[in-house]
Length: 469
Ligand code: ZN
Image (cartoon, rainbow, N blue to C red; front, side, top):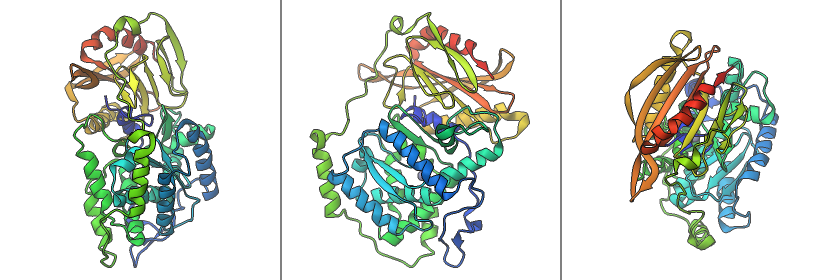
């Protein structure tokens, strides 16, 4: 299933869900916008609990952490040099505080790019290979805009205000901010399986689009290129594998219209539509690296034999928000404050969960009384939006798990596991629980349809062992 994970590609999908509604105040009311010219002139400071220095420090620590897990293209590779020079050129046109930006290329076939607080920006080779030069500049301008507008620390500051009793998930952290991991979690940054996931709200996306367009305009690249890039990604034939960039940068809707509107404030300008010689040379060098392919080995997901993965031997995991038992021979991905994935060997690859379980948390936007139903609606909408193949089997069922009120819903979709060249059907079962603190904990069970019932006793053992704190 496609899960919007902070953690990985297919998982990516679901993770998107969780993440937090960030409320960035309306563009027009921002004190950092010059009202006469409609331009952003400063980085927003109000409502942010982090100083600029703290933000930069946090980003540096996160970069150290992340770079240990990622494979970076060498800094002297022609594409690394090209990306750094394009980044620096765009940064010259970036408004607001002059953050210490860095631009690095991640050797990773998935289509993604992300920015850390305070300036480190990473572009996947998969994205570079999928983009024209203007589109690449558009993505980078957009990422720079997330830095300029301080979206991650503003998001985090909001969550601190909300004083959540505890962290369930990458994004919803406890009041005691637990060091780097805690702070990053609050910002919506998380990493695992060699992938970084940074999820923004739609409001933050709109703001990044606008500021990104301003940067592009000033730097001399067509600001509408980002629109064509998003369209291109959406139209990819295999929508079972939604590009990570689409998951981590949710479509705020009418992206093109908003960008056109901001551009109407600026004098008309012509932009080159063709790729520069430098860009083409760097692309060629990238293609020549590793025999033309950068990490494009086929998915390793295949049908698993149940006797190999089912066991009566369980281990226990303690999260800040719950404890759960899981099969002792399964793999575990996550930590005590973040979203957790548990899967048998071979059940998860390149961000796609074919067999396994994801546990995460969710802070519903609606108040007290109807949280769980409202949360189910939000979860369903997000899951279905990012997994267009999924069809719900009926509507959510109400039940009790121990003493907790719970909801359950099954979907049928397309598995990443193929047999005879055809994807198997997939079953996805979502269980959502309301904790006392009004944080929704949810568990997603995934398996190919023909294996789901056989795995259910294992899944059910896990579910029944779940002790929510
Ligand atoms: Zn974005």
